[in-house]
Image 1 (spheres, one colour):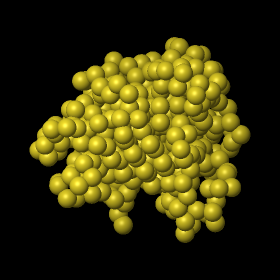
Image 2: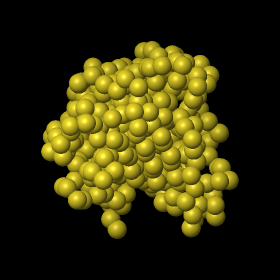
Image 3: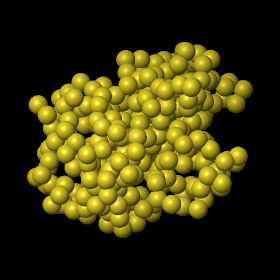
Image 4: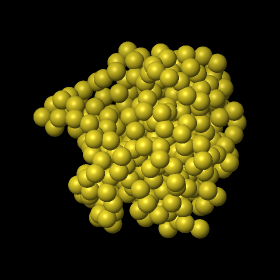
Length: 347
């Protein structure tokens, strides 16, 4: 069966990456692409790398244009998806790459986003443990899917196995991330200009203000943490794509080195797209460029009594578009890895 697809926000980074991956999907027909200010222009002018989609023209983003498809992807700025989702009730499968349907707590939404709160959807991180069951099982029957925040899913995947196994203390988590500016979207912002980024590293959203913090806390609560406390600091670095997340947490009393490593190995040993590296090995962002892979290294620091987890992802693939398409495959009953790869691009 071939499924027809519409992608909104198709001129942006997330929309473009969704299209790049869908273009290689044998069960998908990309029928419609939409935008706002770029409507009426050829897609190829904004996504010149998508040569196989050069025949498509960006249309206006309206519920009427999006509605008549089997699947709709919404790759819109945070706070803009909800105005469309309620009007797409007849679409069999809708996947939101924005934040509008990620959070279960309205208080958290009000504190970090503001505006109208929308119902939470199935969370699009198949490998994430929630109440002892991986999200994969929820996605198999989902009709509405919220793709994750790239930083949030990276940190959550890093920490949830240890929380669920009780080998780390979620009350004192510290995460520092080196991130590429493509995660901030394609809209022109002076602080993201090449002349502002090249040759420097720039912290932002310091001191507990980043919008992905409640999403991480939500995942940790799902793993059994009653009161997770996360110090989260992202740092923009001069690479177009990628996240390298270094997260640490105290070792729980009595947890042995064998129990600690087993927590992550048991969680991800059978996974295709989340892989724990051998002891003493740690990932680079270059290793996951273009891949739907999260590579993870784990160190046990007995001197500091903390576990350190270093995780690398491509923020546009495993962090966003790849996670969305992996979740779509599950919802459609297709092989989970259809049109996705574990192989990065090097050098």
